[in-house]
Image (cartoon, rainbow, N blue to C red):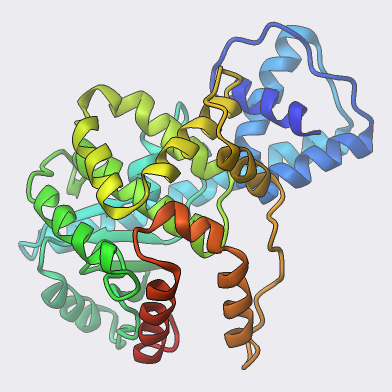
Length: 344
């Protein structure tokens, strides 16, 4: 099942395909689709299946084909809605003299062979220090108060899509190393001038460092998926020659995520079927991506607090890979951070 998924992903990304897919029963295909959906890569699997079908005549049940096609169509629809919202939002701010950088989802989608295949969630933006003015404009325009209860961004809804307006790139209250990195992010943002219409994009160095830290934070806090690996892989493929890797590696070492960076690259190479650095932690990371060690569902009531404590304790091996602080230091800082903003 895993190997079939990896073959389909590689084909969906345009890699050469030399052998046919392994024979799979209908239940086997359903297992592949279920895993692909949990890894947020189902639309890419559709593209991969089309290529295998054209070259080798690989086939599956009508039900499976319909599921793949539906996932592809849904991804196209969601991406189109996000793109329209982004263009409308950035144009609105541009008319008021505010620059808007779009992070993560949309910016990363431009690295994919087919941008629509990069599933989108929220719209994450950064406004070069003008977030207060921008938030006030939005409140006046939509006639509603925006959510200011989060640590490093405000939240509102624009054309039915949640927007996170970042005044800091990362949560500087959760880890001291993040506060040091934030200064680097702000300096790098000042050099980000590439535009697509009214949309500013992160510079390659900013994008690399932010993506590394953001992915690491997801990994340590909860888990990551194959889509996170593809984000890093395809970003490096498109912008790798423009990135100052000595600078990125130095920042990674100073903030404690240099081990995570090595393991991330190892997992990316493994995903693409290339020779990869054999690191014990990377092996554990790879297995955790495909089947998380800690898989409890988060409760919504008072049980959320002991749940977070259990998750943090189980994921302490991940925290050591991502942050420079000691575990005790992290626990104290995170506890204080939670007291300040209980919803975060």
